[in-house]
Amino acid sequence: EELENGPANLEIAVFGKTVQISAAFVISNPRIISISPSMVTYGDIVTITGEGFNPDDLNVSIKGWQAQIIEASETMIRVVVPDYLSFESPDIMVYTSDRYLYSYNSLQLFPSTILSISPLTAKEGETVTINGNYFNPIRQYNIVYLKSNSTGRTYFANTISGNRNMIEFVVPSLTRDYYSIIVDIQGWTCSSVDVFTCHSPWALIDNMSIGQ
Image (cartoon, rainbow, N blue to C red):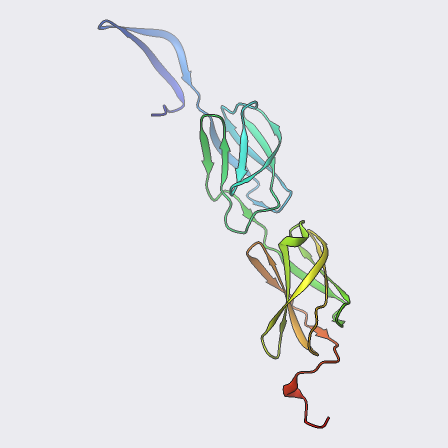
């Protein structure tokens, strides 16, 4: 059983005789007091405030992913938010060689948003840029789809570059139509307000007349 932090009485019992030690005895187990900030994005710095940390025996994981420690003391740990997090509320775990400390639901990722699409009209093979906020800095973790406004079908688009505020993708083979652009970032999806138009030589069969 782990004792609570704070002053404690120390007694020694030998052969039925108990001696109380008068000198002050303070129990100081490691504990997490606070996490700041509570809203973060990939690559941000998070400060874990607490007490009883051993800077020489510390590891930190966020939602199971190892976090890089950039500074540590007995009362504070500063770590970098990993790029691999999903949008579920990430729990923080501070662990040493002999104990684990948890802070549940103490962090949330800023939701990704699409601000603009450029250009709004393109054809197969051309590059389109999505501008926005809080995308994943790892290109492969930003999955881009185009959803047909006519049929509701979705088409995967290959991304070629990206960072927190921008994603570039190549227009896939599509029929001539209007499309919504959707980005899936580790379980969070956001959609464009602007409508993208694909100029393609291929038209939907339903929109063509025989003999045209």
